[in-house]
Image 1 (cartoon, rainbow, N blue to C red):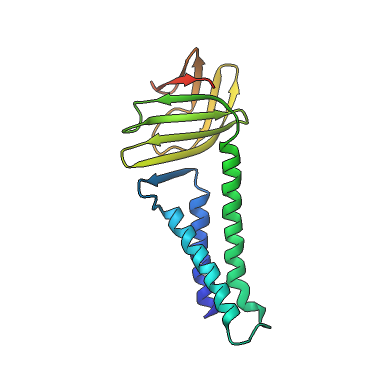
Image 2 (cartoon, helix red, strand yellow; image 1 turned 135 degrees about the vertical axis):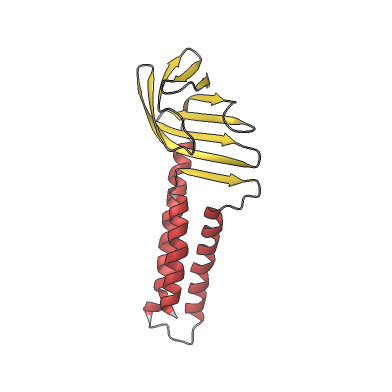
Length: 178
């Protein structure tokens, strides 16, 4: 039975960690996405295994029964630790925001350039929002983006007054400063 518990906690925990560390995340209107679902299942499994271990018939001396719970708890700590770090980076001071209404169906694409070289993107479509995380380097008026996207776009851009023009293609973003 413990081997089956280990298999499930490692499978679901591995999926939850994989989904959490993705640099592209899509959030649907209903909020039911694979990373949320796997995280919920991991939490339920972890604390179910703890409950089963504590309620087992007086065999508290066998600490091996706590291994599935300990692995699940460790994976939950890793996931929530990553969420805290990402939230900290996302809430840092904005250097400027670049936006283009032509990319995406409804709300376009927005890049939030942070002062700590953190880059957060948001594309709004009809029934979903897609978040992108990465970084950038700036040298004079030239930016080099290091970000994974699920569409084709250049990575080298030049700041010109109130716009950001990508060199590799014709994409142009308007810029607003805080």
